Length: 292
Image 1 (cartoon, rainbow, N blue to C red):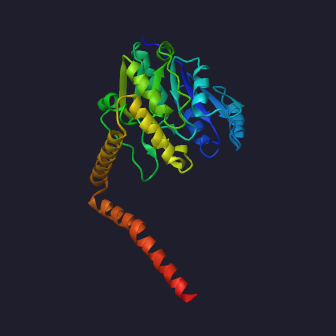
Image 2: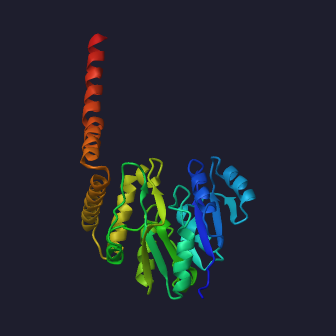
Image 3: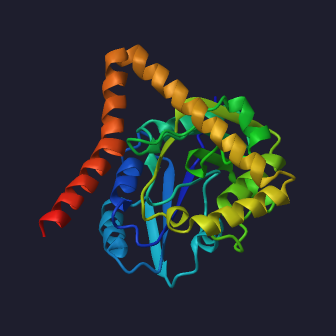
């Protein structure tokens, strides 16, 4: 008989009111009840605290508190020190679990393998026009020092393993601390398993720090590459290869399922949005100027 572990879900939240309820719904809707959801409000100025207070009153497994802003990685370290569960999941407030069966699947895998340190799955992006590279999972471990090919929202780690190896986030990072942390996790782990199913959905949106601060993000990527014997050029090259691979797989799947006519219409729509529409706007602008 396998032992069912308690899963600790950790969420740092800063001005997360726009997306937080979708995450809370995806947690509360799990078909697995042996979990705790710990949230720290990192000094939000929006309605994050109001949402947490309301939802915690209806879900006793949700525990939260608020304090002044300290940053994402300090908040995640603080959460790691609060856990009671045997298995840990770190998922940001703008992401969500992929299905109601995620936690039950994870609990089954860890219950069946007492020596399992790390479990991960796929992470589709929650964005209609961007598709995450669905690379072969056996490539994850050798690729990770060169390319962020796993998202931590689809990563589940045994607490005893983290504590034994003192695996906390490096607070000197602002955006790439999750990549640095996962590399150290994978380097230290003796037993890693993966599942083919998506475990979480990673949301891509314009308010993300990585989107707002591209130059700073690239500087931190260079730092991670240098720390683990890679190079930024190789990192960018592998990223391009992964993107082309994922787009090819996605296009082939659409053609097989929807037929070639669907892809033709999608391509025409793309060309219309990217080429025709800006041209028409430019032309209308010129016409407007000539009429003034």
